[in-house]
Image (cartoon, rainbow, N blue to C red; front, side):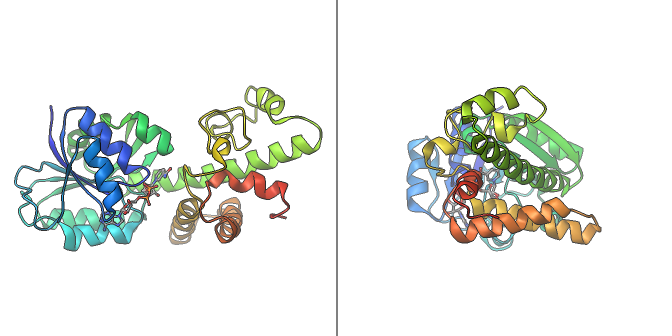
Length: 297
Ligand code: NAD
């Protein structure tokens, strides 16, 4: 069934997700601080909103947020919601944020009479555009069921991870693993090439051997083997280095608060700190050219 949805945050990820909600037949009001992002959303068929607080939101049934970090989502939930928003609106936060803030947001939404789920995504910009994201949803089962048909317009795997915050917990652990596997993949390509294999030959072997992983087969950091990978576009993001560093910071905080040992996660964070100093505008697969240039020891 089609819904009236307010989408907030039309960046690298949100733009494609918003366009897919429109394609699925939903009526989508779209808001971003960037005029260029608003214009692109309008061209994709969404209705641009000039002021969140002043808009007529009386028909809005769900709000999807796709914002950089927890503080942005909290600011929208506490100060930015439309005054005319009906009680019982379903708040779906798809941003990657810390577990504690996600649980706090659910409480804030509940106090205002709304339902809330955290629904961070995995898959990157290409999947956001293609509508093939994976969603990890935290929240009450009935709210998960309400969110599912909306999420299905933007993704192909929708998982219920448990109560509020559990979607973020899954996402943070997953992205720590992604950082570690990307660094490992880059080291392997660099080593193989230095030992005399070209990247395509190593890819053909390792992608069918036990080194196979998503960082290699879907997002290969060496130019050539995977056409859609940022390595073929000069490492233009994609998933930018500062975003990965942010996620490793979330993993660090979560590990501290839960008393979990993450030695490789911490090492990956230090490597991405260096990458963020040197290549803040690049994709997180930039680790391979950094290794080649001797920028990482
Ligand atoms: P982005 O920086 O491209 O987009 C964020 C958008 O939010 C920008 O257009 C910005 O103008 C807008 N914005 C910021 N504050 C706002 C506010 N108060 N009101 C309205 N708009 C506001 O970021 P992105 O790459 O789209 O990532 C968004 C979220 O998705 C992040 O939490 C990120 O960690 C997560 N994520 C990103 C990827 C990826 O591959 N890029 C993959 C998975 C998850």
